[in-house]
Image (cartoon, rainbow, N blue to C red; front, side, top):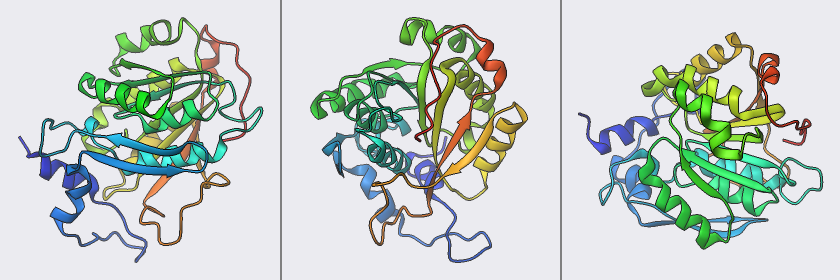
Length: 273
């Protein structure tokens, strides 16, 4: 079995903007992995304020991808923070669910940004205590649940997570990579089941070597989803010299019409994404 460092290093490899061809960004492995080996990471948001996320250091008590902070989660949270506090906007009194939440930063920012119901889920239950503790520390009201992307879980998810009502907003960050291609169909089914008609489905994706995200979105389109790349939300633009600029992109998926035939919440479209 691959070591934690080897697996983490593989996930950190990404495309650069230096050349139209695919290149590897040279890096010092110890320096790259260092942020995942600290107990806390601190973030500052215009609306949500300062948030400290505790994580299980990669070399410490856990060897799980779900118990450390990933860049795509921060970028998605920053995007949501730029949309917070707008009457009638994306988060205003919205029901929100996050898939593959890990430590739950996007869910925390959504809860602080005006959402009425926030449910953070992950297939790895070992991250949930950390997620709940981070939310409590930030003053965010949300619930955390284990959710595996399998057909049985998808069929029961709405009833278990939100009392039979589907969600206005579905979030996910870095849930697509080459190593989990076998789970993509199950993920798309869960998206169909959880998203209300007109829901905003926002996926933040790190652009890595191998273009796994391209294959995923090709599959999504073949299943009837529409996919668009979003610009940064107003007020959420990266600072000058932001190392994440161009590395993480946010996509919006539209629910296929077939999904709207399923029973569930009668929610209107939220165009402000």
